[in-house]
Length: 72
Image (cartoon, rainbow, N blue to C red; front, side):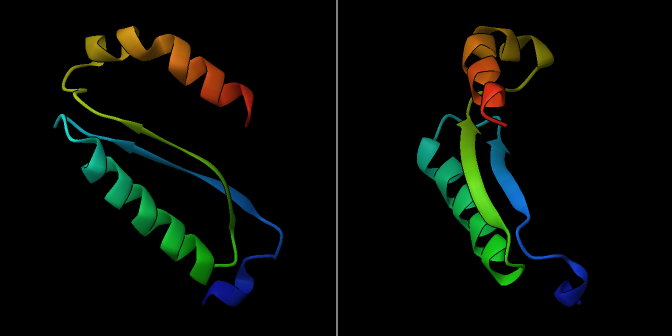
């Protein structure tokens, strides 16, 4: 089924979770990147955001998120 995806595609892995454990985010990102490999998608960047339970929690990370998005 992945033969329909053109080669040369790029993707980004982003993990957003309510828990405080960055290693847990890294495991999620690793899984995404693993499946990108099966689909021949180049992972061009990744970001993990922990302790995000409410939309207001994102505000404190806004600068980091904006900087990440500048590379997309």
